Image: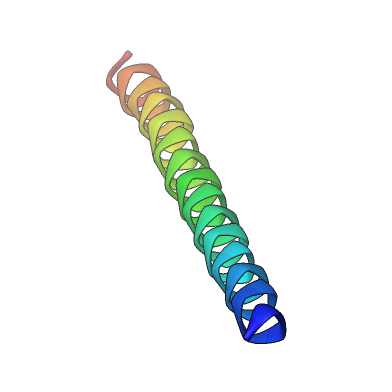
Length: 53
């Protein structure tokens, strides 16, 4: 019974670790996407302004 309990704890820790990894990965991807689109909007906005002038 003790082996089963420790095994279950290890599985729970693995699931928590995987969830944390996935969450941080999703956060990084979302942040990078927003940052890139933000930079691209600034660059394209500058191009539009310079084209008008």
